[in-house]
Image (tube, rainbow, N blue to C red):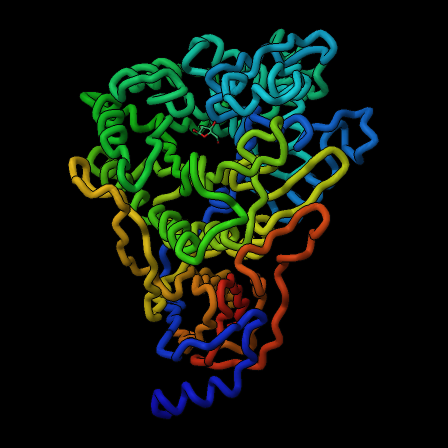
Length: 552
Ligand code: AHR
């Protein structure tokens, strides 16, 4: 069949998308090289992050045992149920910036005797308008044992971030002892038993500080390298290989902080290449969106593409830092850990106590989908990635206010993408016409003209990722076009589809969101299919995330 015939017959044959406003000329293709593996998609690449910030912990995760809100030992039951559904692999805690102000000893022992401390984020201007409460003065009700219980309920691994700025390596050793020393062995093991767990928590992942170039101590990379050496030297391991994750760069496309990665590694390794053995991973943070402007639910078409374009910078940032790491780590022992990522909108918090919260829209769902696709395309570089943050915060999967709880648009992306966990990523090539959009940039410094300059940029027309487990192939694709569906030829090189199941997340309005009073506005929907073979046509609806589960 000639290409044009194929495409016109495919347009007739294919059920068009839920939100298809118009169909773009079908010059698109999605080619999956079924037998070209890239690496295993570690389940941890779909990890989470929870900090004592705003209403993530108190009111988000923790409601208390005596609460009328359904709970399991004080932990919000609805949250646990949804995390189990996601097969949540790992959860990072207690920060974030909070981690470098946190004394873990405040959160152990009898809850009624725990001290109330000023929360790190109390300095934030937004909290000035919040009533006194756990967001400002942390009661430490939720401490290490409560976090471990939360992880156990969710079926997730814990990932703890140590305080490097204001505690010592000795304090760190003793936190490891509290968590991991054998039952009945030490005084801290007895305290742990009194806190409800005679058996060790067996924590494997340990972050050595957080954003040590900023809130974690304003250190230079050479200074942080010294701290990393001190904190990871002779930590008690109780026969378990501990995985230390170094505090890495806080990136932006204009300032990727590659100098931090190089400076840290040069000073860590120096004349002691063996110290690489202590480095399981180097963290990397990237938030798209900016504080000070932008709104999660009100944006123009151009701002839709601007946000997606910013999110797409993750790909380059991963590649840049991976290259820099390779200059020092020739055997590729250490991997990247993107332990904070997501959208950062300002201006629409749920309330003063809900610091950094916003209601995610369909746009934020597409940001998450294209980011998870980027991760899937770099499986050999990434050990773990943690969405920031789980509930009531930045790239949030859930909103929770007292007895009200709702999964956001972002939750549904994670729910769709969990099928990639543990799969063998395979190469996928998308081709589609790029989409022009406009950005306004300020005139260069010193220019007389003060009116903003408008630039035209291009955004890709289709992108995604693919993974394989046995005879099941998972293909996820984002169509970013705000109004046009995209009909593509799906080509499987090295395989053929016996059957295809399709799930699509989209909405007629690109600003659509889920909220307590409209929980099902943006939810994935199954699409009927009757395609098969090594090539078949597929229409990706406008502004959508699509998952194809292909039986080979
Ligand atoms: O996620 C919010 C904050 O962003 C974290 O505490 C910090 O690590 C980052 O700057």
